[in-house]
Length: 428
Image (cartoon, rainbow, N blue to C red; front, side, top):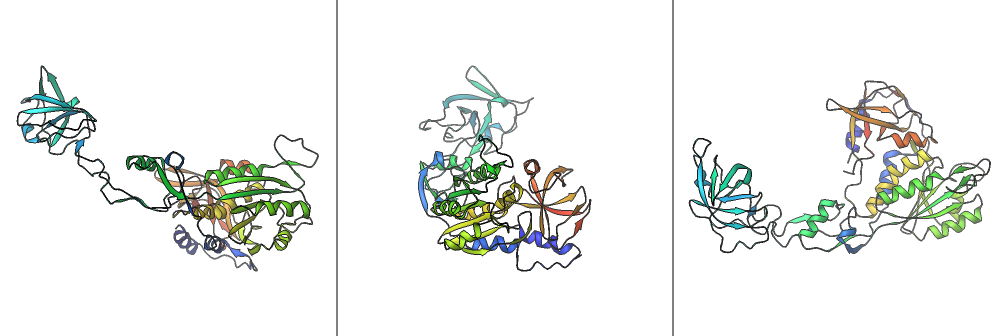
C-alpha cells in the first residue's frame, strides 16, 4: 500500500504551519474508515467471456500440465543435439528427414535416431529421441535431407511438459481482477465458467434545481448535469453497475423519495446538497431515513464536503456538487470501496516520486492537485494542469495524476520532490 512511502515523504517536509482542523477527519483516516466498513459481496458463476475485469471469488487450481507433453516452441527440425556437435558454415552437418510432426498430432510412432531428424511444427509433441529443435531459418532442406550450419544445445526451442503450469498450481488466486491473459488461462484449463464476486449495484443521484440533463433546454441560471454522466462512467470503469435515478429537485419530499429508491442498491452516490446552503437537505434526509453518518468533513482539497454513511450494508457517499471534487472524491474514497466490495486485494493506485516543475501553494490540508507527469531520462517530472478551480472539469480531463501535498505543507517549490498518484494506472 502506498501510504508508507507517502508517510516517509511527509516526514521529509519542513513543518511550516500548525493548522487546527477542528473535528474534520484526515485523508488517511477517511480511507481507512471506509475500507473498514466494507464487507465483500457474495460470488456468482459467469461465463469466462464476460469475466474480464471481474474479481475471482475462488482460487483457480490446475488439474493438468500445460503444456501436457514436451513440445516444440518453433517450426523446425527435431534433432538429437549431439548430432549437431561441431557443425559450422565450413563444416555443416547433414541429417535425413525421417518424417513430420504437426501441431495436433499425437506424436505416436515418430522417433529421431542418430543421423535423422523429424520436421516439426510449433506446439507439436517432441518425437522420442529428440532433445532440441533447429528452426527452419537455420537449416536448408533438399531432397529429403537437412543441412545444419551450427551447433544446437540440448533443449533449444524445447518446451517441457508443465513448463507453463504444473498440476495443483494455484494459477489465479482469489481476489485477483481478471485480465485478458487470465481469461486465456481459464480457457486453457477447460474452464468455461468462473466464480467471481458479484458486481455492486450503485445508485447515482444528482441534486439541485440548477441542473439540466444533456439534451434538455436550459433555463436561465441552469447548467448541464456533468457529474452524473462522469460518475456513471467511473462506476462502469470499475465494473460496478450504475443506476442513474435522475435529478432530485431542491425539496425534501423529492429528495426523500429518490433516496428511498436509491437505498435498494449496494452503494448510493449523490452529488450536491451536503454543504451549508439553505437548500442543502441531504444530511437532513440521512437523519429521516436512519442513515448513520460516519463523518461529514474531510481535511482534503478538493472535496472537504464529503459525507460517508451506512444503512445496513448499503454504503452512502455524499459528494460535492462541483465536478472536480466529485471526481477526486470518487477516485480516493469510492473507487477503493467498490473494489473491496468486489473482493479485490489490490485497491490502491500507485504513488511515485516526481520532480515538480513549478511552485505550488498548498491549501493547508491534504491537497490533491491535478497534474500531468512525463518521464525524462528515467525520472518522473510533473506540472499542474492549469486552473484548479473546482468547476474546471477540463483540467481534470487533461490530468494523468494527482499531486499529493501533505496537509502540514504550505508551499512546495519547483525542483522539489513530491508524491504523485497515477490515476490512470491499474491498482497495485
